[in-house]
Length: 206
Image (cartoon, rainbow, N blue to C red):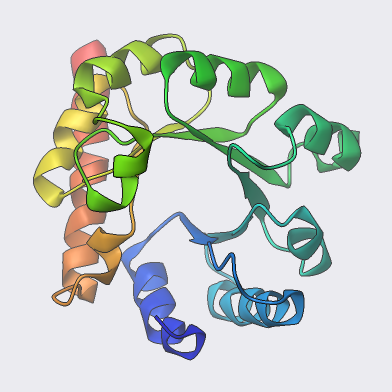
């Protein structure tokens, strides 16, 4: 998708109540990524939607984004947390991509603000990470995780509730937001399903 075409999609995500948008344009030059982040921030200004930048801590800080998301080849989360200092601990989110229960525990211990765990279900873009983890592994990872854990990989509207019931705080995805039939109403339905599933889990636990 061309960077200039992101605007309407981000606006739609904001209007639907999406909590966070991650910029994953890994191949753009620094100036182009900065421009893209700035455009996202203009759309999300004054809303609850936070913009985080994949891997590029320098870009995230320069653009005053809401956080950085770290992958397996990124700077270690504890080093990033230390570089931010005490003042940045609350306002700047550090997300980490995880592919196992042990990685979730390590990311939390190192100071992550949230983690993505996946792939939970089969999805072409995540097959390089091996077979899907499944809901049982998601539940195991969530059991002792005290920070938000988001389920990633093969997420559909019908799979939201099982993920929340397994312990996920929410979901993350790419294709679910960019499919040809994606609309403001479909994203609102997704938001509502997450909220209703979370309320159901809370009511049951209570």
